[in-house]
Image (cartoon, rainbow, N blue to C red; front, side, top):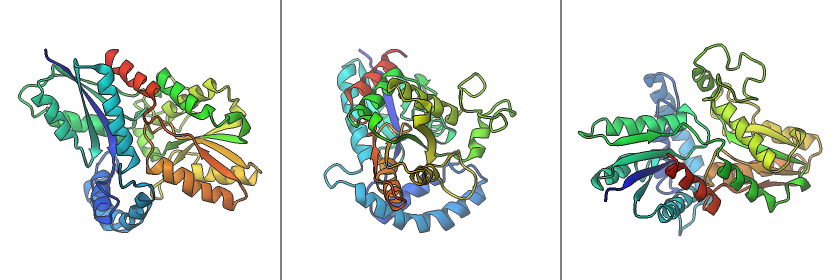
Amino acid sequence: MSKKGVLLVNLGTPDSPETKDVRRYLDEFLMDPRVIDVGPVSRALLVKGIIVPFRSPKTSKLYKHIWSDKTGSPLLHYSKLQLKMLQERLGDGYLVELAMRYQSPSIASALTRLKEALVESIQVIALFPQYASASTGSVHEKVMEIVSKWPTIPSISLANSFHDNQLMIETFANNAKKYKPETYDHVLFSFHGLPQRQLMKCDHTGNYCLKIDSCCNTLNDTNKFCYSAQSHDTARLIAGKLNLPKEKYTICFQSRLGKDPWVQPYTSEVVAKLAKEGKRRLLVFCPAFVADCLETVYEVTREYGAEFKALGGEHIQLVESLNDSPTWIDALEEMVRGN
């Protein structure tokens, strides 16, 4: 019997924490025109001439802090577990493959394995809960670029997002309960940042994004594909599961790069503000990630944790990502079977 193919795609990770591998990863990542959306000449000068040469050695040191000799990067480790657990759930009628948008295992190699297995269809699940052109959009474009060259193209499905998936929301909420959120002074929902210009490009009306007060606060037909609006929706749903009042939590954005304005407020500024207000203990969710990675394990726990303590705070507690939670695998199974 023919099988149905499932392709899980996450962002990517260097093959090792060594500078040469980090350089190769950053070069592929940042040269993607959906990630740095400027002209090709400007992008090449910026990435190859400035960012990659200077950033690679620094980023290599950060990866070494979170790298395991046994399992490698946490993102790849948990992605492999998600693949294994989902395949076991789905059974013999499905073939699940894993790919990274940048570096290994590549999307091309994963699609080739599905093609050679003669699957009757391919469902692509970009592992980013909220849609962004630089993440989900880039995965979809790469998949379509590859399969467009196949003589025979099977049925292919591409999901925009799963920012409001109830099982995903439940997993994040359950992960937080053991820390007793009510005992913390404040809760942060810290999402990966994006340049504001990328949000505006996704506003097909041209007169809503960043032109209407609180344009992202409520999800509607105009902003339903907006990364920031979907992020706000995810945070509200998790907060609702935990009965957090609005004044107890803040939605913010991390990992800014460059001087152009990005989605605000910035997590670093929110952390500093809360410390100055006398807040001592912060609980932090990172609901843009389905697996712990450099941005969660290091950036939140170590960098923001150190900044918070330097300003008088006591502790930042990271709520772990979805990782290998059985409820998260329930969510993936639901997505596949419900397609």
